[in-house]
Length: 220
Image (cartoon, rainbow, N blue to C red):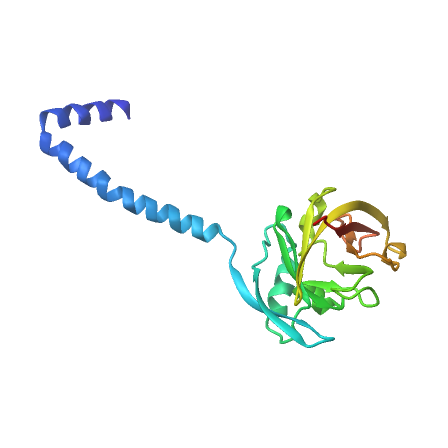
């Protein structure tokens, strides 16, 4: 390769027209490279879709956006179940949960049945409403939307968007409990956010434990 380049270089010095042609070619090629690089950058950006969120107790609705989920770590069947769930009409989500550090953004629906958890995250019924004081419980699958929750740390930021606006939370505790332990879902006097998913994250079959993330409103 080096020898061929040397011969071409010597030929260029003896034939000025060759040098000019090379310069013109490189000048024309640079915009093409720049355009290709820009297209690659745009392709890597998550796509955001418009979505309505609704408070079913007041019927207030707000149009917002949610990013397409990053499914690179998801179980293959979970991806299929998610895509199939999008073909079915359902009630709007209550809000949007975002953990930017973990690239998690997911609609939160009311309830935790299998269809809802295939489509997004679910508010655990019987716990606090999205905007009320008390303990708000949100659950999602460990091999789907909450896969990235394995990397959460104390102090990490969590955002909950509802029809009333956006509230910021900070992670205050991370615990692993037996699946029968319901103490983490108990009522609380102060506003609290509890995220629940199965554990271990890569366990084959029905996981025997639960991964619990507790967060409280971040200081203003």
